[in-house]
Structures are given as structure tokens and as C-alpha cells.
Image 1 (cartoon, rainbow, N blue to C red):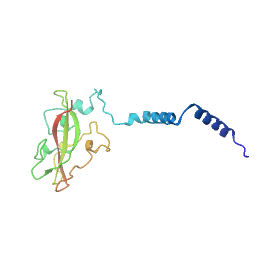
Image 2 (cartoon, rainbow, N blue to C red):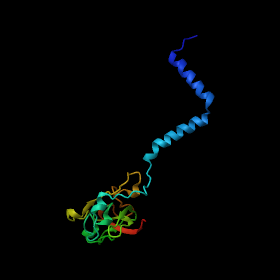
Image 3 (cartoon, rainbow, N blue to C red):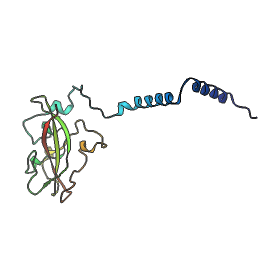
Image 4 (cartoon, rainbow, N blue to C red):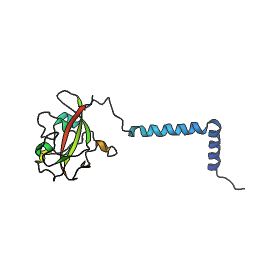
Length: 177
């Protein structure tokens, strides 16, 4: 017979005592609850009570859609199509809109309401050579890449004749309120 260490004897006593007064299910349930409680802050939960304005929302304007601080451009990344012969929601001649888009929720400072904006890349021509003031990279409330439909870091020229990026549009889809 081998002698056991004091630590082994103590561990056995504690384990047997725990087994006497609890079931496997209760221990697994407690471990599951602890794991979920630790992971909960990491879950992507919409914060409905969030009332503070972001830096972009504080500076957003509603007059000039050819500037990066225009309210609809809160999540755009690219050259504004309005500076390239297109419009805020239309591609310039010779380019083709991507059939897929990413989305953002932007606040209009005039009425204080939030709107869903679909950002669509226009493809098929080389990148538009617009002034630097038209090359925007606003990432207001941008989410990690595990939600690609909300990511402006992807070239969205899937399903077009050419995957060459030209510019980006910002079409208003509807109210988010």
C-alpha cells in the first residue's frame, strides 16, 4: 500500500463531501450559469436605452451629400458616387451596382430619428479619382467582421461583371425607429 500525500487526502475528503450533498446536474447547472454569466457581456446585444450621440452624430450635417459628414454617410467606406458623376443612391454611367450591400443605422440631425441606410458599391471601373474630401471612411458603431452585413471593410462587388471597385452609394431604406 502506498502512502498518500496530505493534499490527496484533503482533495478526496472535499470531493466526497461535495458528492454527498449535490448531484451532477446541479454542479453542471452551476458551471453553465457561471460560464454564461462570464460570456454575457461579450454578446452583441442592441442597447435600446443608448441615448448618447456618437462623435459622427454630433458633427453630422444635412445640406451637402458630397461631404463625408453628411448624415447618411455614418457607416460608409469609399469614394462618394456623387463626386464621380452618380448620385447619393445611383451609380455613375459605366459602372454597375453590386447586388449585395452592407447596412448602417444613421441618425438624421434635422428630425432626430434613425434610418436604415444600405451602402452599395458601384463596380466595373477603376476607383474614381475624386477629391480627397469625397474619400470617406466613417465607421460609426461599426461591428466586428463576424457580422459581414454590417462591415464596410469588404469590397462588395460580388455578382457583377467586374469586381473592380469604383465608388459607394448610400440609399435610405426606411425608418429604424
